[in-house]
Amino acid sequence: MCLFWPAVLMLATSCGTPEAGDVPIVTGGFGGKPIIAVPDAKPGHTPRVMVLSAGDGRRTIPGDVVLTDVSVHLWPGDRPYLSTYDGLQPIAVAFDGRDLPGTWHEALIGHPAGSRVMLISPADHAAGPGVPLTGIAPRDVVVLVFDIIGGYPPDARLVGRPLPAVPADLTPTAAVRVLIDGSGAEVGPGSKVVVQYVAAEWPSRRVVDSSYRRGGPAAFGLAPGTAPAGWPDALPGRRVGARLAFGVPEEARMYVVDVLDALDPAGQP
Image (cartoon, rainbow, N blue to C red):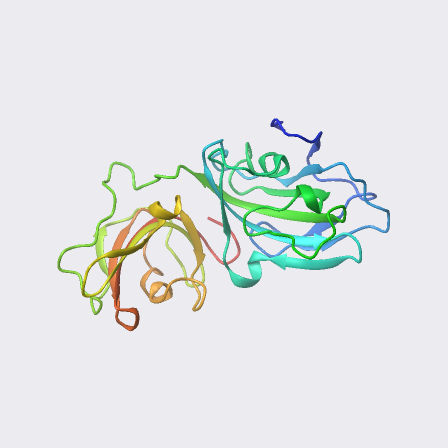
């Protein structure tokens, strides 16, 4: 089903795989970096949203924090611009009433988790969080391909559990401690995880970072330099639904992490 959201622009919306001709061809499966090829035809300037493949997860709704990967391609010159797949760092888009382009509402709200959606639009109507589109002429057409990991309430938490807090006896040298067992999918090396977390510094034990303060769940690829230090070692082998506490001595920090969801490196839950 296609959903239409109020916007300043009139959007052309299509469900299903687009036919070849005047639209880009996108190859590759959900969760992997898409390959985008634009046609020789000149692009139109009416924004278009197309559902390339529909997932089977929860539909995103207004008020959600939508976590998504995105690749951006420039139609003029048929050139890649940026991709969150390269850095294994999905973006978080908060649909909490803040100013976002109508094209992003159309592309990201009302679709099931696991969906791949394409937005074709002039650059001046396609910039959003993590996609500033600097250095591009406002009327140049860009192609954005979103892989929607999921939509989550800003205060999403483990069902029936209180908010995470750093245990009083946790130190930066502490090994991984399972505070709550999970029963979901196992987190594998290199997985993308959706989490809520709290970080405290040592020795003051002051909370210095928290996903709740940042506005809601975050997603990380479990790779050095992408996830916070210590996470690529601490989270693999645990299960979705777990709450973990551990220290990171090189940062003099302690973390409590709630694992809300996980996708393996191929993009599957």
